[in-house]
Length: 121
Image (spheres, rainbow, N blue to C red):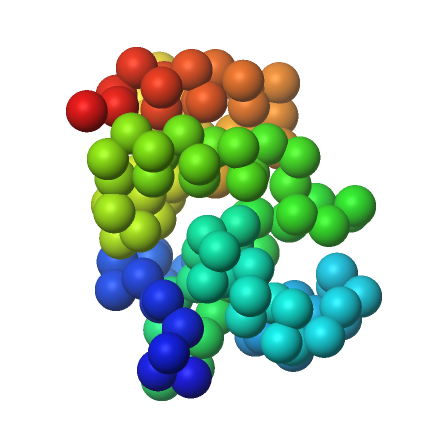
């Protein structure tokens, strides 16, 4: 499991997460496919109690949230590290009253992507 690129960014303790097996079941794919999604930065994961965990906020009823992969690409292409991207996703935007991860599930999803583009360095 140490070969997975896990973020060391601290998530708020109350942030719900899925194990890799739960993500695999949710997406109807193998655990190896989930590991590949993490390695390819199509999902971000953290270490919780020594185990990989993926925040539940990255998913909707259909699977991976519609704008999530594009948002992560914008952040990483803009110079953010995995840790910085994870921190940004879970830092509340005062004027939205939401974290970007939560905003992915609202009408503000495109605004969050625009903000990520504007912050690229």
